[in-house]
Amino acid sequence: MSKQIRDALAQAPDGLTAKQLALMLDAEPSAINRSLTLMPDTYIDRWVKSKSKHAAVHCLAFVPDDCPHP
Image 1 (cartoon, rainbow, N blue to C red):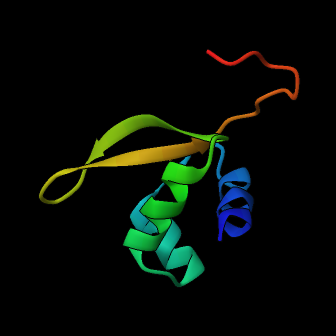
Image 2: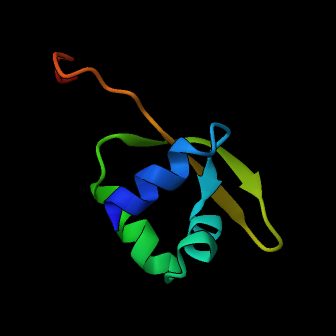
Image 3: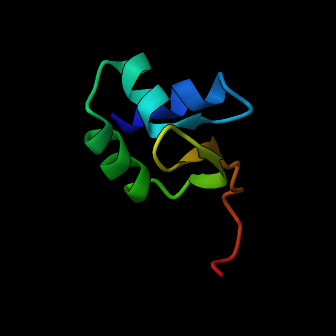
């Protein structure tokens, strides 16, 4: 699932919400959220207001191989 998420985020430079990713990948939003939390190369860029709450917009981070840990 993480490769599919990476591919989708690579095609969306402005980022995507978990719901948008779920619709694109025909998956449950909870599965997308679970995968996103395990992916060190994605980050929450901003929050957008949805109908009843705020949704995180996820982007792909380009982390160099020799990047030191924080």
